[in-house]
Length: 409
Image (cartoon, rainbow, N blue to C red; front, side):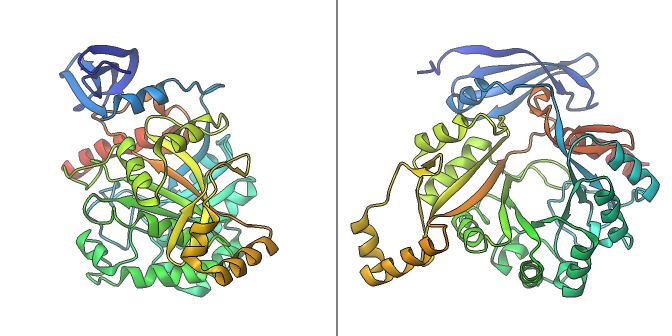
């Protein structure tokens, strides 16, 4: 057991960013009581300290993971435009006055990227009139093309059909709530109208009809939508014919988002344990035992398997597809009644899928205050300028600084 009274160095050599000039500087990771901090020193602006993780035992579990191989980015996010048709109080790309990247430049960026996945992002990428041509360029180079969108234009079924015909492989749809009032609380608006959920719901129906693989991108805001996590999982499991998973992250102090409370990775996972009725130790042991998955102190991915009974999720832990925690038959009979249980179970078996599955990625983006650059040397990248590829979070931090300079001129 960790001695919470001692203060010790956990990592003596790493790199971070100066809070003021954003230059890469020497840093170290230390434990203070039960929490983890990153300490860094800039020759120009002095010393800084940022909270990295609130749970020392949780951090140490991840610190023991050794990722094999050289750093490699398997996906690249390209903001094809910084313009947007919405005005969100928490957008991580706060400024919209940058020029769009031209087709020739996009062709060069996509062709030179060694990874397989290309994410067309923004701003709002559907504002590009030549989006279909951009998708065709991605497909020409043999890449998997994903559209990162707020989904407003996807409420047009003909537009969604054109996306599929252009070769679009998948959509990452921002989807923060099932309640219209939540979008009002988050100050998400389109031409000052708050009918966002209705548009997103229609977009999902169109994506399902066109059989376009869809991932829901959810940002958790403490006290606003953090009680809807189970709803997201149940919806994804019920719509598994086209919803391929969830990407859930905490709000962070990047872009327009202010100093409101954010959640660290251990806190995000705690919400899942509690709302989904999961065993914390068993779940974490299973996730971190999967050597092929990429985890770090900001990111974990996993599958949840279980049964949906009405609007309830009964999770079943599996190892190599074999359940190692079976919900008791008497419990199911009590919940459903014998006739209903047998009917549902036989129906599931006849389809060859007795358990429903949901893939989830849980993310806590680092900020300029606490980024450990050794922890973000692989995974998803973001274009920076026209000739540099950085980890996604590293890039958007630098873009924030760059955009503020432009806005101040």
